[in-house]
Image (cartoon, rainbow, N blue to C red):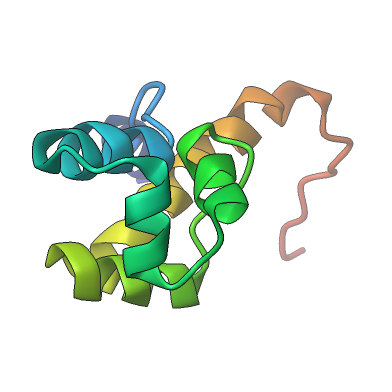
Length: 106
């Protein structure tokens, strides 16, 4: 049974998902012809904050997910899910370096 679970889990893991900032730039800002300054103003955040997200130096917080949802119509959950998938993918890249001992009931 654990083999089936592992196979299912592996099939659900995305390979190299894009950072949500890349999605934001390509699917929201560029099609609307928005500059970083104009988009930041509409979102009620600084240009520096939006630039950090767009360039993958900052992630999408729950509050930012709500702002993006209001501005662009996608759900806040979808923005957070993108961030979670990206963060998990990054963590999995470091899996072999983690010093963790498997525990089980005796």
